Every structure is written in structure tokens, then in C-alpha cells.
Amino acid sequence: MLRLSAVLAFLIAADVSAAAEPIRIVAFGDSATAGWLVTRQDAYPAQLQASLRKKGYDVAVDNQGISGDTAAGALRRFDRAVAPGTKIAIVEFGTNDLRAGASMKTVRARLGELIGALRVRKIEVLVIGLGSLDLASVAKENHVLYAQWNLPPGKYRARDHAHYNAQGYAIVVARMLPQIETLIAHVAHP
Image (cartoon, rainbow, N blue to C red; front, top):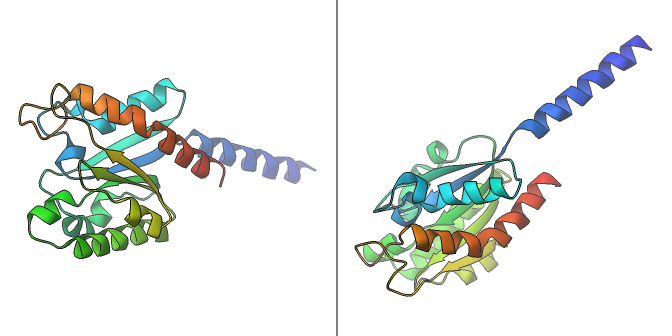
């Protein structure tokens, strides 16, 4: 009987320990993820973490945005950017690939490869389409969730008039919270 009690105590402690770990989310993208022209705490990953924690979620959001990065670059830095234990990835790439001359077909293929690599690691994925870059079909083809970030020019833009300012990021975070909460539910109750 003593042995059974010890085993049960160990299992309960292991379960509590696992539950005590925050849900790891990686924001994986380019300058829109990195937070070009805003402070690190005003970039969307920090605002997302704060919003989720305010709602009672135990999360840690890792900003793995690099200004100028492409989906091709993301594939090269995948293992460094997506740490073991990551449960959710927010993927925001494509704009710089197109600017560098990649075809939309190539962008779709690179994103598909990236999403596939995440799914192999059992990571839930939210794909972000930025501005006029609509990636809804990429998300649908890969059976992942999707959010479109398309705020009008003006007061929600940084001084370069292309990237978002802190207010703009607050809006896109609020708009994508339902998808993130859905993914949190998936990883919390697989």
C-alpha cells in the first residue's frame, strides 16, 4: 500500500509540474513581428502575452521576428527560433519573399514547408496575412487557423507609414485573440 501511495504522489506531482509550465508560443516572422519602429514591449508578441495573461492564461510568448526575414530564412533558422516545448506558433512571412522577387507559388510552397515542419513537432499554427497579402488559402490547405492584418493607413501606422505602431498592434492582437484562445484550448486539452 505504501508503494502505491508513493507512485500516486509521484504521478500527481508530475501532473502538477506539467500544468505549472506556461504554454509556450513563438511569434515567428519578419519586421511586423519583430516590432519595427516600436519598443519591444509595444510589438505584438509582448502585447499578446500581456493580453492573454490578463485573461488568466499562463503563457510565454517568444518574439522570434527578424526585420527583413523571409519564409526561406525562417526555414534556415527554424531549429534556433522554435524552441523545444513550443506549443503554438504564429507564422507571419511572405511580404519580404515577394519583395525579393519570389513568386507567390514559391511563397506558398515555403510557407507550406514551414507549417509542415511545425505540425510534425505537434505545434499548433496560426498563419498571419499582412496587408494585401492574403494567405487564407495557404492556411486552409495546411489545416491551420488564419488571421488577416489589414489596418487602414493613418493613425495606426508607425512613422514609415508601412509598419504598425503600438495602437495598431493592440488592434491586431485583439482581433487575433479568438484564434489564439482556440489554439490554447487545443494544447491544454489535446
